[in-house]
Image 1: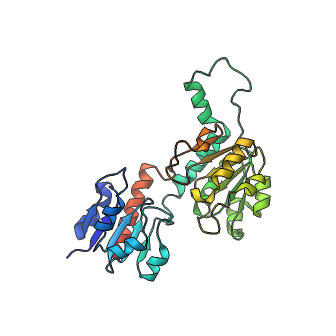
Image 2: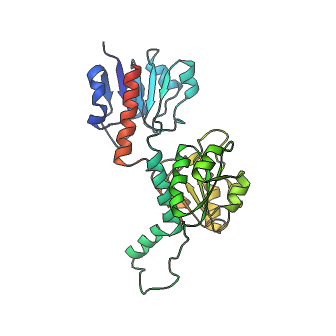
Image 3: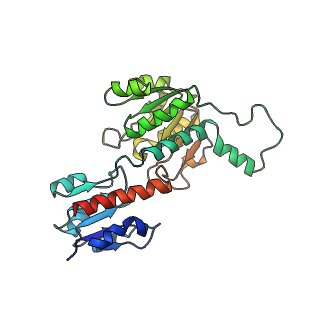
Amino acid sequence: MKPKILITRKLKSESIAPLYENFDVDMWNLEDEVMPRDQLLDRVKGVNAILCILTDNIDRELLDAAGDQLSVVGTVSVGFDHIDTAELEARNIKLESVVGILNESVADLTIALMINSSRRISESIDAARNGEWSTWSPYWLTGRDLSQSTVGIIGLGAIGEAVAKRLSGFGCNVIYNSRSPKPELEQSLGVSYRNLDDLLAESDFVTIHNALTPETEKMCNSEFFSKMKNTAIFINTGRGGLVDQEALYDALSSGQIYAAGIDVTTPEPLPTNHPLFSLKNCTILPHIGSASIRTRDEMVESVVRKLASHL
């Protein structure tokens, strides 16, 4: 019998075509809806591989339902906080994720959020649409410049590095914080290391790219925002769990910080009645960091190749 693969979301047929040649594939038939948990627990029985996405909770219950023949889980994402990695390790199940493919797309969106938030683009679109646009006024909807500013990058991994490369074209002074200094990147990118407090105090923009761990969860809290300039802009295209959203709301509504642009929230989707949506100085995107056609196709194809190779 052919090894069985469960795909938890409908994906492009051309991206997963190689799997049909050698494997028994069971794919959920909807692109925009999560497979119900009861169906997931039923359809996972007896599979050798799972191809999942961020909305699927791969936990002990699911792994028990799958059975001992399950040998690999692939996720179409860089992060895997939706997967119980300790359980996978205990059961000798391999984890495959996306590496390196979405760095450029997420970095592009990070820059887009910086410009959008600093130049009040979303607010300006609403003003034009709502009939607030009248005669030219010298100070109406004026914002702040990204060019020549100081940008603090928290987490100088692959995405943080890609952001730093883009910022060089804006003539920015780029500083960074990470678990340890990275002299080789300092030389190649022209960036400078700072401890976290100094980075927050100096930066006109703060963008965070840390992984979500127990140590980093809600690290962007009221104390964090209190150390930023009241003219500074906060950007998050990493994980929603890095931010205490109540603290972010307080910082924005009180004028503690100037603006924020976020692509990730907790939960996702963020309820439409959440207080952050009421703020003109907060841009919220629906987790589209990697949502370019090329990047999403490459993400799926990468995980497909890894699963096929493993099996």
